Image (cartoon, rainbow, N blue to C red; front, top):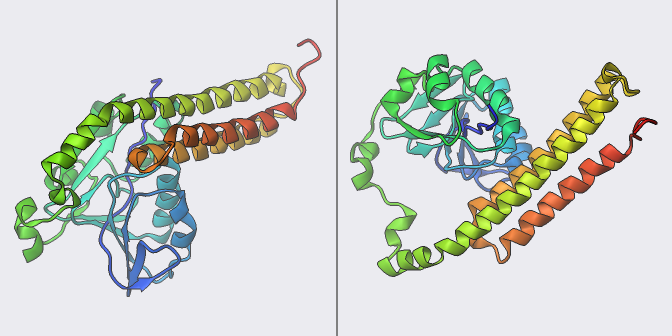
Length: 296
């Protein structure tokens, strides 16, 4: 399948006491509370958490592919129990996955071909029902939200938490940031929507520039491999292609981070272009270390 699936799938909720290096990571005893978008900036502070941590509470409405992958590996290695109470795109990395009755989880797919198979395999390996994945998620353009009981049915969650008084009121009892927005605020957002869509589309084009550069450079190295009649050992080709892939992932992450907060930047398209240019330059440096065959 030519489409990539970046299913936001890993973690869980809230915000109490001891502040670590990352302000939105807070520790209470054997629990850590994380409330923010998931990205690569969380990897180092998360790795410095005490080894005594057993439970991860997360509330996240999105993030980036590379950040989710790195954090998921850390969560699995620590054998943490993940807990979602309100809303989350991801928490499947937990060995035990406790979902609150009001919680939901959303699976989304994109057009990045690099991440389709790895993410699908991770989801299934981490417990997601294979039939559900194949029939519902393994296709482009998915934006599929599951309620708590449905998450149990497909083994995305392993346990339903007991409802407490705070959650018993449902969404009518909750307050959200958009509750303070007026009709005029929504009209302003509507009137700016066309410009926002244009900026997102242009950023996507820069994302695809990185993808094309990585594909071209990776194919060039592959052609020089000894298994294709060239001079570069196969293991070297694979290592260098992996390096180029990681550079592409870093750029994808940065561009997606910009797109998530597209209204917050003065010139988001220029920022996307710069992120793409940096990645492409580094990919070309790797490519240019290896001369073409004499016949080329």
